[in-house]
Image (cartoon, rainbow, N blue to C red; front, side, top):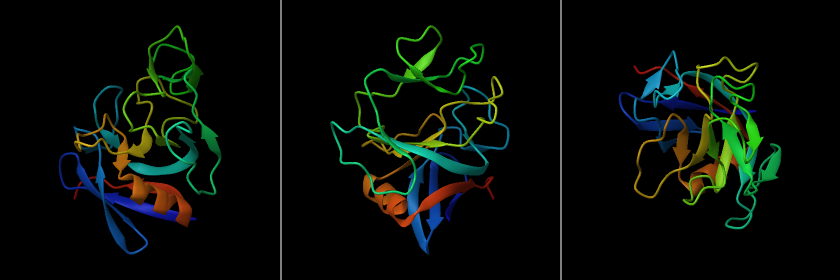
Length: 170
């Protein structure tokens, strides 16, 4: 089991500390919060296990990892509607509730890892779709996820990363 620790001072810039390395990371535009709410653009604190790795097989090779690995499909989505029974769950599109498309036009979900946040069971309004994924080329903040460069993400997965501990700001 390998745990990475995410540290930040303020804002969306952070560092992931793992295996004696400091890896630059991007987090939510609102920084890190102990109490996450749907749509607040904050990254939640806590110990978040990596549940499964999904990837765009049409764009990138499968990452080497010990976690469950699944290719994404054009009909994959994620429900972010707190009023729906599928809240914070992977869904098949079309879906009647508000949702996010996992098969994105940009490259940030070419490799995307489901993090264990608000999922056992989901509490409506406490936040959904918290992932570890690829950074955007312009380095813009996420909506609450943790984003890494592809080479760093692949290296951590191959080394056996199983959880991220997100610390509150110092």
